[in-house]
Length: 419
Image (tube, rainbow, N blue to C red):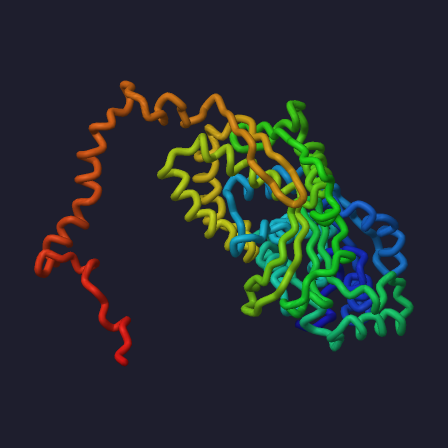
């Protein structure tokens, strides 16, 4: 694509090293107007001074949109309702933020009459896919510029040297060894000594949570109320999504909750190691699971667990705006109709322990589960059930019995060595 084709581009802007030099690079190589967009997803102090910084690096303007409520209600909560966890541990904190950012990136490009969008994702990561497939789904006519796939810059050292050469104001230095992504849901860490999976993360790396060893010596209890799978109260007090989640983050961080050290399989094929801090999200997921355990029937829960793996894969791969994700969401929302109640959790030195759950729609009944006689369950009925349940095994055994000994009882002589 000839670089002269682009007249105006909207850049997903964080104010970090990469996006700071990208503003200058775009103006040099595309001779275009650059408009920056920053999504406020709860980065807090990282947003300070961004507008001045963007203008100094050559941007014509900066949009900042507060998307925290939308992030929680439209992305975080549906994913928690689905029970989606990527590769057993990753709660998808970066993954479901990207389609939201890309959605507003496209909206601003349309508002400004831009003919292209740009991002600072590397050619090795997942985020380039998440941004670009979202743009394809929402406005396939927009061009996408990915400088990391075009320029000669190959390292942090190269990027800093470029900034110094062209007087781009940056706060980055070679001593900042970790690559981080922060939003209301989590903080991720990559790079530095983490690149060797044998190395234990250094305590100074963590920024949100205290270490379990330094957490309070006394446990703390928290109660979370749900309506149809959505958290609506904290310790008996009704709260909006944002205040509730901020409260959970503070509680979890205080008690060292939500640290995960994971080697994951990236969409592009390589493995990478990431360390995540997800205090509030970890608490919320545990509470939601506990409530589902008493409100979901066996068959629905088991099938939902199967679909949760696919849901997580879709989110991780950036396929939020697809019919399959919408179809899975429709299923999930049906399963959440009865997920109303309260869960009590005990937080103690990195541990999250369910200490109670209750619901007016609970399927658990003490009288049904007891061993006494009652009308709903007659223990004599179990005999017929067992005969039918075990019938396939019984038939196979009858067909394979040799000398009145089942094949499972015949010795395996291959396990014995000769002297």
